[in-house]
Length: 324
Image (cartoon, rainbow, N blue to C red; front, side, top):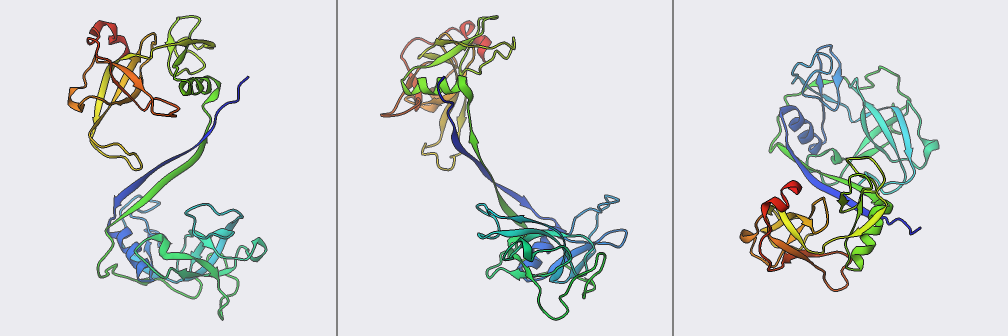
């Protein structure tokens, strides 16, 4: 049996959001080396501050300033830091209750090893050299070996009482862009591995359901309608019919295709499921339902680069209406 293919894949996008008065004050404060919390209805000081009371869900805006040192309430050692994490060397993820706060803030602790970390230890903020108004303005925490920086006690406000703060700063941060990214290894399974290997030989194969006799491309290994295995390979196409399409006007990152361009669902001859692919070789505003197309492979390409018109008459609507 042939080996199942695998490939590293990355899904990422920038998430942009505006900030309300509470989050704006908190992040701008970090830029100015000031940590702000908010007083809840029960008198607790919440850090990081929330815009709504965690108990009553009422809006809260009573900002207070807390200390830059605190107590570790719990921790976990990270022996293998990943890309984008606060430190490049092994470190501890810690929950730190800053002096004057009643809740804990999650961040990294720079420590030589897990034996140097313990619940109750005193730590302090190490500020980033360049600060922009983000949680990364706290570069990490470090052990607090200053006088009075001994072990903390649960429920203690430490050496700092929260002080009221108006939340006003010059040039406040009003929005942030947070990159979201997922790195993973994709394994398509045996059915799609056979499909991908066939594409490298300029062949397109699907699988036929032994019950309903439908041919699925790309194959899934099982019929989604009948729920039975589809282990009979069928070569389809390579020509097909555009069943529906969309015009793309936004250029994707790392995709060397000029906009606008067309992405379409294509019902390959002999298939009972439309696949999607880019349409080329024709002005985008001339692509239409029923257009007959064929795949175009680039030199040494493992899969079709795009589909282009065959020059045949358009397909009759009744021949593909069930595949839209």
